[in-house]
Length: 111
Image (cartoon, rainbow, N blue to C red; front, side, top):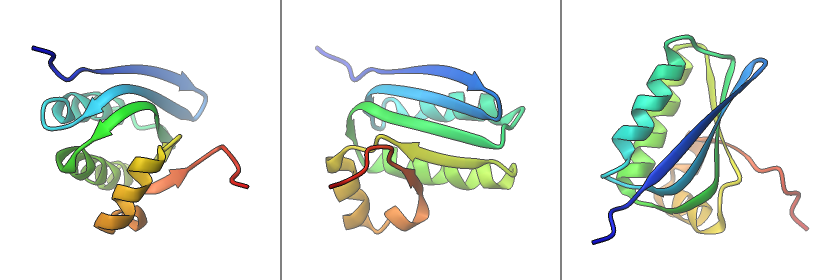
């Protein structure tokens, strides 16, 4: 049986901490993401960027976790941003109305 896996690599650069996520964000892996972000927030940088380029799937639990972490970060005077958000995830964020609750920075210029 193939269990959903999420790998998270942490890069600290100056005033920014980038978390590169690869795999699935769901009920099995959301807690792992929370743990890593909470560790970063123990010594909060001005910005945390979640690089979702490698994320293949994100369910409602994953989305909820992103929103919770975003709020938690702002309480710590830290800005949590999502980058390289895939089309499928943008669609889900639009449908759920969560897009406005999250800061999204997509480097690829559209058009």
